[in-house]
Image (cartoon, rainbow, N blue to C red; front, side, top):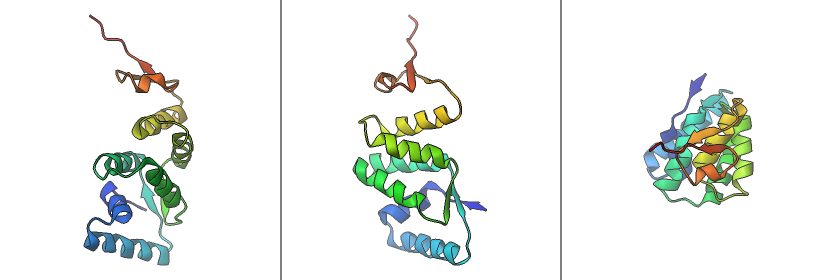
Length: 135
């Protein structure tokens, strides 16, 4: 099995470089024809979400819709599908940062009770616990 990197997903979704986007499309078609499955690591999903939000300023709903569509592609196998599905589902009902939601789901599915953070905004979520700075 081969895995794909963030730039492959970004080119596929954004098509900001037509030549690279076409190469990805052809590679995906080849995988489909060969019944090959490509792994999408969780870190690639996290980085893709960050890039789509921060660099391309793609609206939240479009990012979540795109992830739902990617999960349905038979050539893609997500490292932790349950994490991605839980992330997409819960992200629709909150304004919390998408990357924090994904980190929260990943930690919960790994058996963690919470994530210790200095991020005051994230600490308002049930998944995070604020670490108070010592004076």
